[in-house]
Length: 339
Length: 289
Image (cartoon, rainbow over all chains, first blue to last red):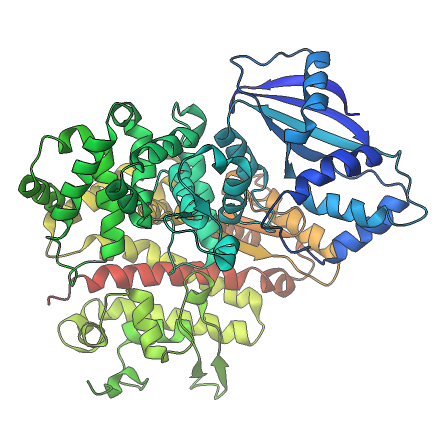
C-alpha cells in the first residue's frame, strides 16, 4: 500500500499535496498499469541516464519521487493524513502519473533482474486536485525546463487521458483510430487538444511554424503562466459540455468541426460561459449560420484566412450577446473593425 | 521575375543588406589588411526561426523578414533609393562591428570577440530605439514609442543601456519572445570546469536575469529581455578587477578568458541578430507599395 507522511494545501491550484512512499512491488502492481493506459505512449528515452538508473535500482538507490495525481471534486479536501491515505489507496486505479513515466518503465525493466529487491521504497508526491485543468497547470510548470516533453505534447497526451470522451454524445477519434476506421462525424482528438491548448494559453495563435519548436514551447509555457488559469471559474470540461450540447444540431456541429472555429470557441467560451450556457442549440445554429454568411464577405486574397477565422470565431463567441442583436450586414461591419 | 543580381554580395552592396546576408551565412569574409579569409557558415537566425531548406538563400532571407514579403519589395527596400540610403552610416558602422566579431570569433580570440559584442550592444543601444521610433510616416506611433521608452527608462532600466532594454521590451511585447530564453551551454571538457565557470558567471550577475530553463552547472538560460543587462554586467565584471567593492571576475574564476568566452559569444550574437532582424522588419514597413 501507499503510506502518507504529511498532507499540505496548495493554495495556487486549490489542491491537496501529500508526500509518502510505497514499495517497488506495489508500484509495479498498481502504479505501472496507470502508465500503460496512455494510448500515445512516448518512445522510451534510450539515454545513458536510464540504463544507469536501471543498474542503480538493482543496487539499492532511492530514485527521486514520482508524482501521482487524482481528480477529486469535493468542495474541501480533508487534510487528515489518514483520510488522504485511505482515499489514495482506495482510488489508486483512477490515478494519473504526472511525472515519472520513464522511471516507472526503468523500474519495470529492472524488476526482471534476479537481484531486484521489490521491497525497496519508492518515494511519492501526490496531488489531489478539484479538476483537470489545475493538474495540467501544475504539470506544465513542473516540467518546465525538462526538455523531454514539450508543453504541447503533454497537453496532447493528457487531453486523451484526463477526459472520458464516452460521456459525451459527440464522437472523438485519435489519429490512430482514424487510421483503422474513420467514424463519420467524429471530431479529431488532435483538434480537441488544440482547443484545450488555446483554452489554457488564452490565445488562438499557438501554431506558429515560423518559430522553432523549442522557442515556441517556451512561448506556450509563458502564455499558460500568464493566463491566470488557477483563478478561472470555467473548466475545459465545461467547454466540452457546451460543444457537446451545441453539436446536437448538425450545422453547428459542422461549424465546430472546423478547427479554427473550435479554437476560437474554446477561448471565447472562457470569458462568456454564462451567456453561452443559456443559449439554445437552435439559437446557436442561427448565429453560426449568420457568422458564415458574414465571413464570406472577407476577401481571401488579402488575408491569412485561417488566422482571421480564429480571430473572428473568438470575437464572435466572446461577444455572443452583442452578435445576436446584429444582422449579417452589421456583423460584416463588426468583422471589418476587428481585422 | 528575373533574379536581381544586386542580391549577390559585392563591394557595392548596401551594408543594410550585407549584414543580414552575413548573419544567415554562408558568406566568405576577407580581412583586407591582414589578408586572411574565412567562411561564416552559421545561420544565426535559424536558432529561433524556421526556414525551408529547399529555397534559395535570398528567399530564406526574405522569408525571415516576412512571409508576405516578395523578393520585389525586398529588392526595393535594400537596393533602391531612398530606402537603401536611409541610416546608411549606422548600417556601415554596424557592419564593421559585426565583421570584426565574426573575424575574431573565427580566429578563436573569444575575449576580443566579446569586446565586439559589447561594442555592438552600445551601438544599437543608441541607435535602434531611435530607428525603431522613426517610422516617419506615422508621427503618432513615433511619439508613443519614444514616450514608452522614456517612461520605462528608470530604475533598473535607466541610462543608455536601459534605453535599449525598454526598447527591447516594447519591440517584443507582442511577439511573446520575452518569455523565451537565450541559452548558453557550458559544455566544457569536464564537470569541474563547467562548475567553476557557471558559478563565476552566476555570482556576478543578478538572479533575475535567468529563465527557468537554466540547469545548474550546465546551462545559463537568460531571459530574452535581460540579455542586454547580462552582456553589460559581464563586461563590467570582467574589465574591472578593482571596482568599489563590486565583486569582479578573478582570473581563477575565468580559468582562461578565451575559454571562458568561447561558449558565451555566439548565443549572445544570435540575440543581437534577432534584434537586427526586428529592426529590418520594422523599417521595411516604410516601403510604400
